[in-house]
Structures are given as C-alpha cells and as structure tokens.
Length: 369
Image (cartoon, rainbow, N blue to C red; front, side, top):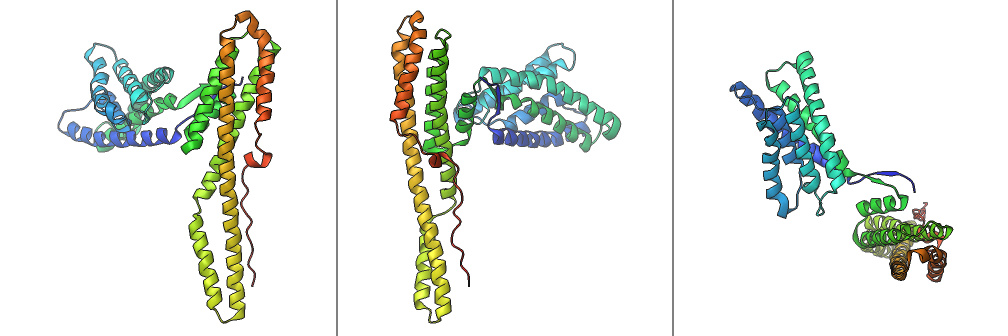
C-alpha cells in the first residue's frame, strides 16, 4: 500500500479563503474607524471571527448555531489572564475547528482528524500572522490609519485561512481508496453514486481480508479486490469523460443544422453552391452519427459499471461465510476465495480496452471548395 496525500474540494478551500479575506477587509475598515474614535478593536479576535463568519458555509440546520458559536467561543480565551499570543492562538484554533467541523459547505461533518489538524494549524499560524502584522507596521506602514489596520486584518485572515487547509487534505494508505475518494469528489450523477458504492464495498471487503492470517492467499485475494475496484473506477472515469463530451454538444441542434443545410441545398440553383451545402450537410451528418455512437457507448459503460459494482456486491456477500468461520481457517480459505472471485470477474463480460480508454475527438469531414 502506498501513502497518498489527496487535496479534496479545492474550489471550496479557495472560495472560503476569498470570502474570509472579504469579511476581514470589511471589519478592518470598521476597525480603522473605531481607531479614529479611540476605541481600538482586538485584531486577534475580530479579524479571525470575521474571516470565519464570512468563510463558513453551513447547511441550514446548522447555520444559526455555527454563527453563534463562531461569535462567542473564540472570545472565551480573552477572558483569562494568559500572555499573548496565547489567547489569539486559541481563538484561531477554535474558529478553524468549528469551520472544519460544520462550516465546510457539505452535508457531512468534518472528520475528527481533519478538525483537530485544522485547529492545530490555525493555532500556530495566527500568532505567526500577528508577528507578520507587527513587522509590517514597524518597518513599512506604521500603526495608525486605514491602510495599516486593513493590511493587518487581511494578514491575519490569510494566515488563519491557510490554517484551515487540513480540512481539505486526506492522507490515504491505500492507492485504490485514494483514487475512489478523488472520484467521489469530482464525479456527478449516477456514475458518482456507483463509484461511491464501489468504494464502500471495497473498504468492507478489505476490512475482512486484513483480519485474515498473513498468507500468499490473502495477498492474492487483496489483489483481486483491488483489480475489481480499479475496474469500477476506470469505467466511472470513462463514463465521466463521455458525459463531458456529450454535454458540450446538443444533438438536436446539430440535426437541425443538417436539415437546414439540406433544405438550402435543395433550394439553391447554383450547382457549385449546392455541392458545397451538400458537403457541409454530409459532414455534420457524420458528426451526428458520431454523437449517436458516443451516446450508445456511454450507455454501455454505465451498464458495465452497474455490473462491476454488482460483482463487488457478490464479493462482499462471499465474505459473510468467512466472517463466521474460525480465524485459523481463514488463511486456508483465502486462496480458494480469491480464485472464486476471479472466476466471477471472468464470467462477467470485461470492458473492452477501447471502452475504458479516453475518447479521441472525431476528426470529422473536411469540406473543400
């Protein structure tokens, strides 16, 4: 098994950072006005909370509770007589943990390890942002006026946002699981549902295999499972590629253009112009046939993906008897079970090489005068 570091939901992290900077800039302007009125705002709290409130995206059922928690909980460290920058560090860690847990923009909550790592990273980076702010004020900006306050708030928000990065990073020890998680993040529609199902079945089967005694049969069985899951993911990727190609072209529009060109060719008196229009219609007709072939291929890929996931389901059912067996007998059963699953895979029609390969663009027909 190879160690794999996956950066998931990249767009979510980027948009969260931009929103956090916007929220901190807005409060920074208010902080500059408050400074003029001799009522300075604590940047370590207000910049971080503004960034967290602007960056967090929670489901409706959690939105109000999360925003209340972000406004109140990071303020608690400032009520204790602790030396700086410990209160600011704790405030940043609390805000990052809340955002990673409930404010990640998805229905599912953040994983405990990701939440803890985000809190730790933000707790370290917020004091570093404070130090950077102090250096900028001392050497370049001064400590009075709109620009120093605004830059200070933006600096703290940026460092805090970078601290939330672990919420989008997942470390996988299994390359097959890492590939499945990437597909779970990138695919859409029915292919995504099947890929997620295949990933879950693979994890369930692998959990049973890892409890077996070490033996060559266990390694063979694990290899069969990895191949079955890998084939499912390859089919899902190929289906997604076809979806992207077909989604960019509307077959009805192409057919309408063909009909229009043929009608204009029939109505044209000039022989050369008629020939040009007929060639153009023929070219578009070939493109339409190619789109129809791609559509049928997409349907075959989806059917093969269903069959491959069903094969993984059969493999999971095959492990039910193994779980009820004696531990000592599991090692002896591993090789036999591996052969059985391999025969199931051979009985199921495997996808041809051209089905799972990327689709090359259709060259089309060149129309020459």
